Length: 429
Image (tube, rainbow, N blue to C red; front, side):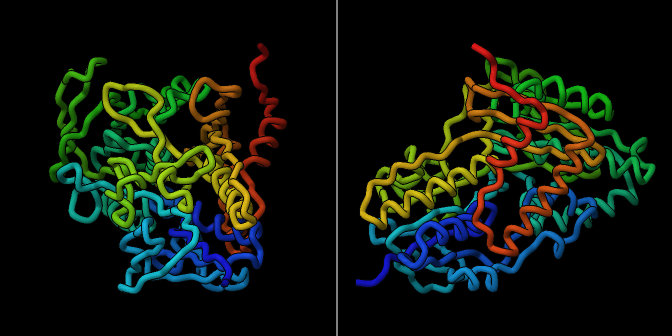
């Protein structure tokens, strides 16, 4: 009988480190293959910098083939078109099939631009920073915008689960426009489905509401909350602002010369619509051990998993899956696969905490939520110029980790160091 075959589907922030950590956990007791669309890892948190020319693609990409080969992990760069969990196999992008004993789904999301008419950088009228290809296109559009500046709109649509990059990009655009002496020619509006500024899909963390409102006022950025984007036409974002009961409060037409709007997410086509595996949006259902209840040899981590919203809001908002949370899922899955291969019942659980550095170009906001969903033991946020420096240091660290195939988790150590350096404490009962 041969060794079990572990397939990791996706090689983004979660899938890439999963390959290293799972290999470290199981050693030679299993064969591991990473299936990914392409052979490159791209550091997505740096996309806002790419979109204004502060980074280029080469600086934030790593070719995975040689790194994985050194670790004894195979790479198939054709991607997958469909998972068949009942038969334990994948249909690959080249039409062939691959069998597995254990599957780790780490695909990230499918970007649902098509759900809103006129949204997106391919067939729509808005830019995106969700993918490196989008960020490069956003930079070209930004350079053209700077030659003919005017109104600018940044935001996130109804159902979007990740608001931090929208705040980051609005502030980074502000910083770059000031450097170019163009800020006085650019009215800026932030449009979000959040019920208040700083909600972040988490019902706030610490005082993110006041912190982010203050940062936006200081930068002359107007905002609209409880906003539902109904459609985008050339040069105009059509918005419905909701009352607390969800009814329409006002309709607005926001002109723009440049717009970057984050879409809603859903599960990728390879897993979407599989009964028992995914929810109606196509996100993979997992239990406390990151396993799918219907197909227990299927694990999932990161943005592709299903997490219920923190509570009802007038306009739907999703829940972010931050780096700390993703890394803890990876660690739990690696330990659980080691147990499963040894014939034991998986027992490890992820620590769903949130740690985030939101860079504003000339400062930033950091927050730490333990656990991510309230009520919390730690609920803290702070701002300062140190956040910008910390984000750059984190980028360098993570890219170095990928280049060398390091398996040691980082976020938890960083969070503990941050707690010590900033005297961060849980509330006293």
